Image (cartoon, rainbow, N blue to C red; front, side, top):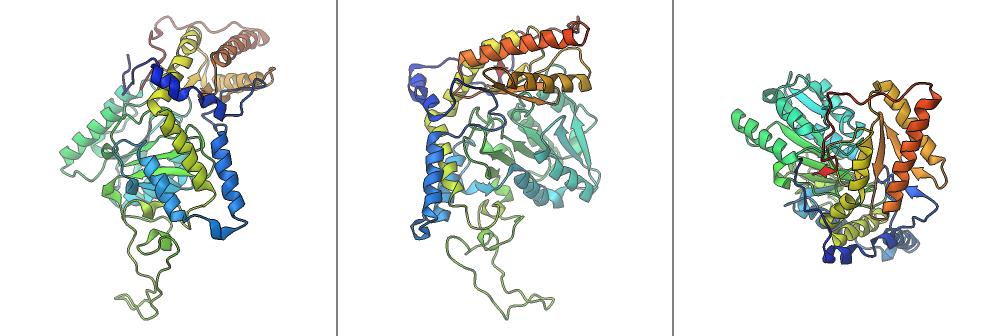
Length: 455
């Protein structure tokens, strides 16, 4: 049984009360079965209203709030979702790929030639591409941790499956929940090993650095590890954080504060907040004789990792409204509700398909058994397309050989039942149309009884 920070299952009366009107926030009617929160969440009504009001204010810009004050409110709300973080530990980036690019540049001086950078198989490109470039620039090697047969990444990572060695790791890039199928990583166990490795190397603030992409979990499941035990956490807000496109919340451990600015403008420097402008020094020169008109140091906290420019006065109120909803409903309540909603249906899916043994509450990937990777890719894409053309359409996605399901509080038991019934019917027809039987379940592979277990 996986128990990676798993909360108690079951919804108390107080939880029911907090979530009783949650579905009313979403404009998801009976004409669609929307199970693609892992791609993008429907925008809640309160988030839409915040955005419309902010856009309207641009007609009278003198009425805008101080955007730096709005940014600090968002930092404060976001810090409450990352256990033990402070508002000054949170940067506001335009995307998670931006955040990972910034962290890669930040740690680059500590990445030695021949060291190892570890990513998971089939991981999202936004958290991998910047590290590929980092490894190439520093002479390091990228290693891919292969997907374990039982979907439990943690033992495989602790063993170093994939040919990499803990004593050579510079950066570990891990999700809380894998974007394809929701399989989770026990970040606490990984952080324990990171601490042990730092002790062995005699450097408490050096590598290995632990970077987490929490986009497919933050807002629906707890991070399950104190912020102080990871180096970086990034999460785009347009999924379970219920926000608009164009913002990723980026936690930066204090050891990395004031260490790097991907965009070096006045907002990343001391004295450049709000409407203040930095002073131009026409007669200030470096030791080499080069003019240094602006020489302010980097701003304190994580602000130097921000995306550059003035904080967006339209997006920020929407991000704030989404975070306020999540915090009002409470992540533990959302997690318990989604587990209660999806659990029975995932168990039913596990009778025919492969589903992760340890998975996020609202996210699961469903894989066909016995198919080669290319055949599984075709099966998943065909399944998503077929379900989309049903009446009403059932909206899921095909990703790397899995049909990915992302549920939220607007979904019902009927939605999940309709999906499972439709997928079974598609699967039956898929093999009939191809003139061969469904691959048999491998005799040596036991299906775990706790298919709905989670972090």
